[in-house]
Length: 496
Image (cartoon, rainbow, N blue to C red; front, side, top):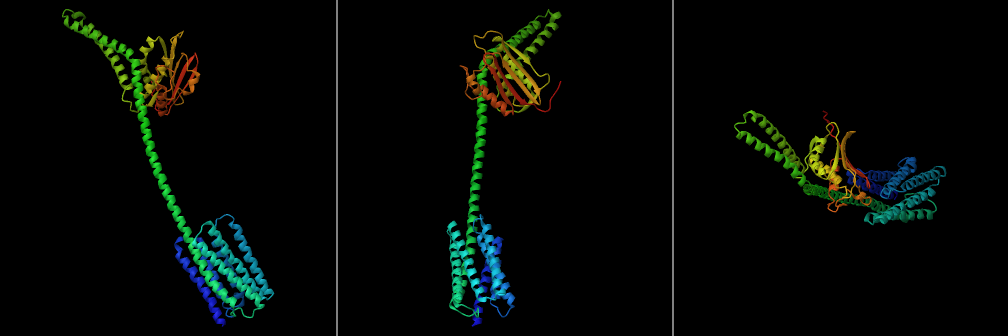
């Protein structure tokens, strides 16, 4: 009969080894430390059961103490492995509690068996201790179930309850017996315990595998969801990038159109003076042409022919050069508006704009004071756009004088180079900018002029900043305004 009981115990060992080995093989690709701990712990318990079933065939030391240590290590490992399914917070306390409880049990067990020779009491302690410990399986399954309802959590609850309750029945049965002569003697409570072990071990292993797979599936779904969100975010960023690119292109086109509009508006103010300026060299050309014709027709003027022809040709060249310069400057300044980057002398840009503005300033009785840096100020940018900036500043300065202005109208313009920065200053001694609009002078469609459009200064600021520059002003009511433009100079400077 003893053999039958031992055989049954061996069958429990077989269940331990088969189930834990199967889980190890099934989840080997996951390389999970949790799976390794669970399976190794189960195998330790299986080896402990082998020793527990072989009393009389193995030394008593192996039966009483080595088997107990293996069983304790196996139970502790399985409980820690299950705890890994729960949130990491406050788990250290549970791990230490398990460790201390197992150590305390082993000390008491050794005291009962080695010092007191109390096998009956040791058997009661053995079954009671594992009944309490296995109830932890139920509690952990309940916690998992509360976190997320799942079949694995339910199976763990039932497996823990089966192990705990049948071990409690075995404890009660041994206690009621009052003594023990043969631990392998068949009894009703031992039969219940064996059935509970089969059922509980099976349910707990299936539960561990099920929970592991459920968590892995949720993690895969979370990764897939995150990947979907990442793709959506990438698509959204791409669309945003495309939209931003379109907006920037539209902004550039708006600036270009406004630049053209501003040029067209500025042309009206220059037409009269330019017509007068162009008329003078054209008149000179006409007069010199007539002179040449007369000299050529007068066959008797051989003595003075060469001198008159030379003077006429010199006048023609100068007048033609002046007209060509004005036309070239106009063509460059009032071109298509598309940004073209070149390297040029900033002082030369100022001279070109002044060539157009001076006749108008003279008719308005405005004195112009110009002080340019003595050396070339090389700058890389769109010359046409920067000409507009200077033209806007000079035009604004010329319009800063009210009809009732008393005194000498004056506009001062100078350039300088400091710390690789080109500085352009345009100042007037007009009426200044009203305090209430000082903060809005660079805003689009903001103007204090009856005939103004509110584009010039906004466009000037936009152009300067697109060239990595800065524009600012200082003003004083009744004393005038000074605009300062700062631009980064090109490193290669040319000195004369």
